[in-house]
Picture (cartoon, rainbow, N blue to C red):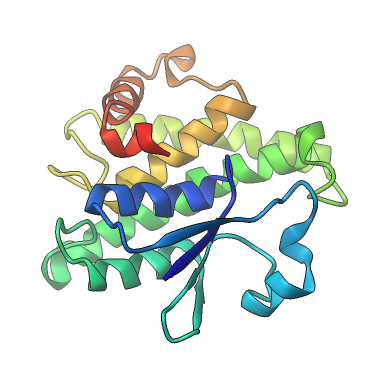
Length: 207
């Protein structure tokens, strides 16, 4: 299998961290240069007409896009350690938290950066600065919510590390790099402590 990825892009990082947690070694990575718009080339859009990374090319030639879908496939091929839930009940609660982190935290961070950072202007045309700023303000709503979640648990979806932690961590690292955001700057001690703890995992340091 091949994983089409791009350095420093947050969604590919989610998949790479997921793979690292599982010790997946049978997937070859292929870099896609977003800076030169390689993701919009005819060759790449034949793999994913949405012109987005990551994309997983299966051994039979089919391609699978969308981060959560790729992780679901890899969870099936490499079931241990389990990161998406054992049984329907745990899967449902992990998915709920993963979706909340993706839609309420990750997406808001991405929208803020895409529409306010000058370095992203070639990739996001047109940029809407007011929308980006508004999304940045909503990021604080999400981080305050997540800080409260982590007040009485060690991990985002409960008492063990799951895909929800990967989504939240990669979102915060994206904000850390391009928004210069630190939870501690907002007095969010629980979220900062969780972030620092997750950052020590080998999977976080490998990608």
